[in-house]
Image 1 (cartoon, helix red, strand yellow):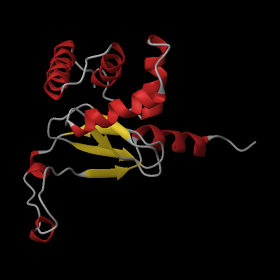
Image 2 (image 1 turned 60 degrees about the horizontal axis):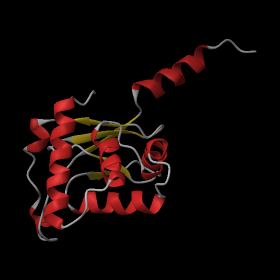
Image 3 (image 1 turned 30 degrees about the vertical axis):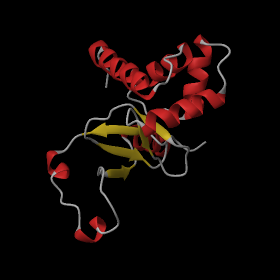
Length: 158
């Protein structure tokens, strides 16, 4: 999935507005961290974000990346996406959607489903506290991993 320039710019404008509302400076480092996320649908982890931003901003620290990600998450500009056994991953898509997660390679893909969006929250869960959002995570083995497995089986024995 390709993110349009208009969507990236809309996300950046929202980021700038939120920073100013919270009294946070819109620094070059923060902007580059957010742009790295705003321009991808790949759900990168903090280390990947750090490595990519470091190519453009040599003096950036991991601490700055982690603190910025924490701020972005707390302000609802990004969401955390989880893959089994891996580090936290980050999703700049704040529109209602769900995730497909590959249990082999950790691929995370967004998808929408009106049927899943309409699922009622069980009364027992409502009793836990205030519900802010609900998301379904579908887990399986992606087509790439399934294809790799199939190709390996077809090799003739040595």
